[in-house]
Length: 153
Length: 153
DNA sequence: TATAGAATTGACGTAAACGTAAAAGGTGCG
DNA sequence: CGCACCTTTTACGTTTACGTCAATTCTATA
Image 1 (tube, helix red, strand yellow):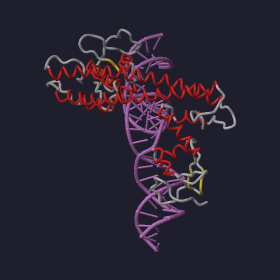
Image 2: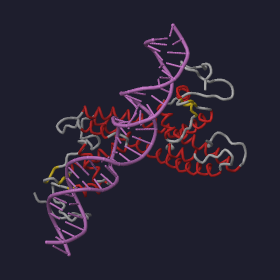
Image 3: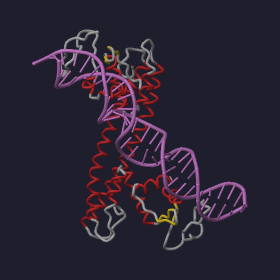
Image 4: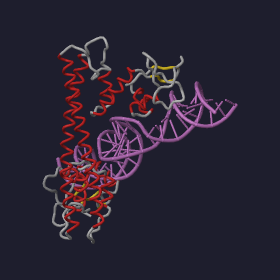
């Protein structure tokens, strides 16, 4: 199988397919296009999140893989683990309504949303405590008075 | 060295010191009092954050150790690493004004505050994105129409 | 004394998401 | 032809803060 001519923004010596319908991309361009490393793409594949075609041993990514990768990255952005993402994607059925998949996604999303809100609360707490102790420390730095138990060992 | 009579809220078979001035506490009570595990206390010691006395091989914690532990827990609460905490505590000098220590603490605190605020921003982003995609999914679940690229694989 | 509970050290395991090195195969360009 | 790149697989390393045994010892109490 032979690939076609070099693409647009490619720093690739090898051939790159940017032709018509079948759009094959190799790992290098794929990585650049989505701001991930080669290692990451191979890792995702190893975890069953991606399944690029092969030309011999060379990975060839299609827009299907791109869509999946987008989902993975979105999932990670909102705090899902790769396992969660995989679990949701594994339910995908191109022939159905994907009700089960959607329900699972919604379920996980609700839980994740709760986690995120809890996290935000924790961070707010931390910010407040930290600010308070910073005030303390500043006092101790300006006034040379009685030391509180704020930054001493 | 012999310890004294059992303490207040102790489920301890062994002796526990709750006498006058010198207040020695063993690892079990220490852990309960601060809501950490034995493993944690030993770990902190291993990392040089705590230095309890010893009765033979038995660790004996004083209020000095309690103060340090409080600081460690506060540090962790606001997101400092144990290394940071140690670095700050190592500068403690009971004979001086601890200016260096305080400055370092303030410095680290400012950076940590920035990190926390960045984190909060990220979490807010995540919450927004997640909420949006949840809305999408809900739509897809109620209407059986054209599937967007939101939860499909 | 037997037993239960507390303590000790040592050392491997865990989680997540890759990083990084190694050793090697393919390929176009000059 | 050979170099410069791209790619491959394998596999150990990293980070942080402990968890989880395991084997052993110490002590007090029944």
